[in-house]
Image (cartoon, helix red, strand yellow):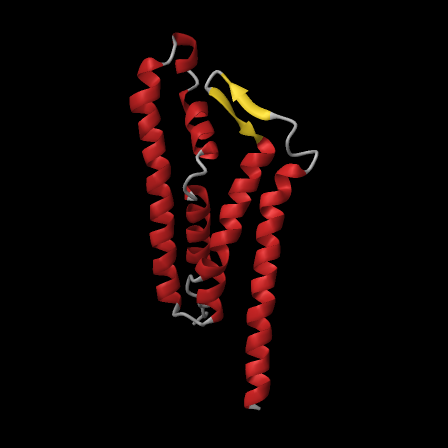
Length: 161
């Protein structure tokens, strides 16, 4: 019995590690597909990297942080309260980063932008958030929201009395 449990744990660990590496390679290789590198996002707010490169980096971040932040807590049976707290911390970190980027655009970009470009401040903020790939802010926000949603308490059916 013990040998079967060890074999199952070993095969799960090796299988998931291989799957993680394959997913990571696939996500960062997506920029090579023909559909991915034909356009870039441009407008009065600026021009960004090719869409394929942007998608590859966002998927790479998501693939890199998904297993330790979602799969492992759920697999090892963490307390739902602990998962919810982790989700709150991740969502707050992502939201703080996004709000910091937006504040920076209002403080730095808006005063120096031309009269025509100023009316595009919200598009500029969205553009900068979408192209800010140095830190996985959107991914942390999304994974945090997912952990909060998945660890919410089960609803108790109302009884008619």
